[in-house]
Length: 289
Image 1 (cartoon, rainbow, N blue to C red):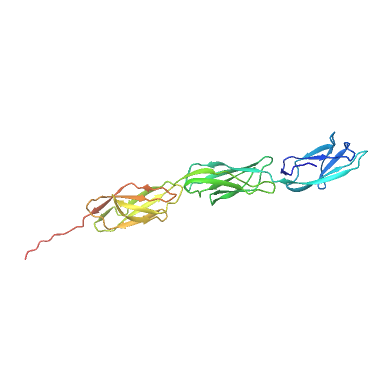
Image 2 (cartoon, rainbow, N blue to C red):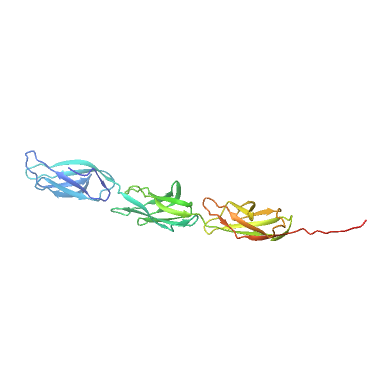
């Protein structure tokens, strides 16, 4: 009996049976082909003593195929068997949509993943990763599922979807889908808590940094013109810097805040504000001896 060594699940496997006779004549009659004890089909021998049956209903795994010849008026019956295997069906997984792309750091991005197979719709769970960073998993419905993530770092990201396979479907890995992620945009504002102060008085400058897609962290530099007065570290998007070194000379001082940014969050500079420093009042007394 001739048959394929292996056939993917749900694809048609054709088994060809050949019956020979010791006297050199061509046998006639029918042959029944079984998967173990389950009848697949019956075929009638042709002029060459062969016939074939086909099926696409075999389950995944190893099978013993038996051919039983019932004989004819001049020939006794006979049987033969051979092993074959039904393999899992090949699949193709793709990241079929990314919305939005490009995006900003911290912005939710929805990834649509599709898994296809030639003869059936795969089921199971998909995982998506960016290098070694797992972005999450989703369960297939009609061969498609979606993952929404805000975890993509700034830069050019390579997103890969993995299908681990199922009982009847082979595992597969997608080609990398490119996602461009820009640094989160920021806005910096500086205010003077005491807009007018006397020389030597401690003044406080408050910087706030916000973003629509992320919570800014890191340092803000406070400047008086080109002179850096110092740094403060953001806590919940704000920080303060105190100074008592501003003189009345050059008042009002031109104060600005520069947010220094991070690997994922963009720098920004505030508008300039004026800080007034007045001279200390003095009194002159003239006495005579």
